[in-house]
Length: 632
Image 1 (cartoon, rainbow, N blue to C red):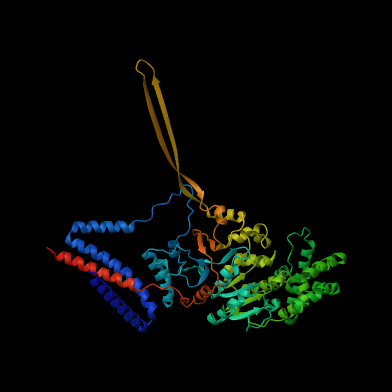
Image 2: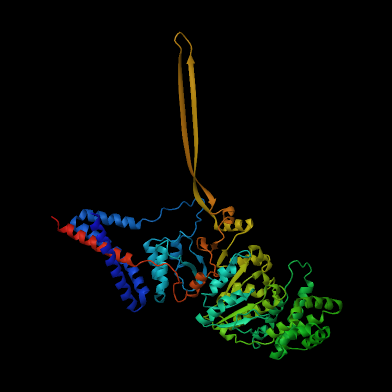
């Protein structure tokens, strides 16, 4: 008995191997490649299932109409049955599920913001959900579509990335303490798939080293590395950018634009209780820049010329006299000259001392070489074909923060001057955003008015409290209200955990309370014939009631694994995901190949044989049903 069984097993294995080899050889020669045909094969699974269901109902109806109708009604009731309604009396908060990700298109995006990967154990979706994800991918991403389908149907397949659609993501805020992979898990990961033009504050120089060549080769971007102190990737020269050259000298708002540069050059101290000297310094810079914009030659509109005038009280007084005689801009320069002339004596010297402590960095030879002229065309940035890296070493970022502020202001002014309706978005990546400092009005303008100008921003903080260092008082609330997504890579403080828990809200749970009572009694009677009696009684009461509970307590948030990130997005259930780590070769390869839909090396695959098995079982079932009809 054993020998025939072994013989059939060997023969079956040989036939299976032969069919599989022939199938792979044939598919490899078909137009479109293997993955296109695998994708069509997976889509045909749904067709086979529905054909089988309809055929089974039809065969049953022909043999016995009553049982056929009964079977049809039962199957319709089965397919229409949804999830039981959740209790929401005390709260309806819940975590986002895999079906939420599929229905919202967060697993099917080719362009957008990557925020993490589906958690282990979560990638198990029913066939309709997996087919919906498969259908949403573009035709040229067959391999990527097949991979997502496999990952949703098998625990052994690679888990898909969560990519929020570009149309839904305008401004993003990411929080994570030092070492929580903000740069590797978010900045670098998104620059590897984000095709839009980008302006990146690269504090350590690692972002440009990891993404510059990829963006130049894959996206066709011109790479501009503005690195006054070096640190740019090999093969990319250090460019120069004069921020004042970005001002449109023919603009009707020419003079009013000077105040934005003045407030960017002066970074106030949040602990300064006497802001008079700082505000007076802003008045001086505003007046000098207004004069340079209106009357100086373009080659003289530089930070060095500004420094040359503001360091000499005699030149300031001479400039004030010239401005009071000017009729430019309807007398606007005259009023600025009067404000400048009002600063005299010791007050002027004290204001200039404050000004000197704010602008000393302009005297650096490296800064002069990086700001004296502009060596690249800004028009390519507006056309969506440029990536700009502002590279500074970590130990110098504090001293040269005002330079980054004025460069960001210049880029923003260029974009705003281009007008509304540009088709190409430009995304700002503000790594270590707290270094930008306070009182930078262009940031608030970018957040509240930038959407119409295709301006998008990503802010990266070490904690929520750092927002107060850039957006004080009520502006911090305005900042958070403008965020499309808030992501927490690691929650380190109880205050942050409590705020997240309150944002997520409460859910309704059932609480079962049991109470048990028992009693025992004994009586004894003494007489000629003694007698006694014993009795025992007991009762159990079960009280089932609903109550509210935070979906996740602050203590539970603090104990989440280090590789789990919390994603909060309005009009969407909160999401838990696995954060990315772009320093790992396999994850970086996956992100670099994302636009073409290629699989990274070593990715596990799922055999196509299951589609063939389903088809064979369907045919066998139909033949069996047909034979049963012929039986008298």
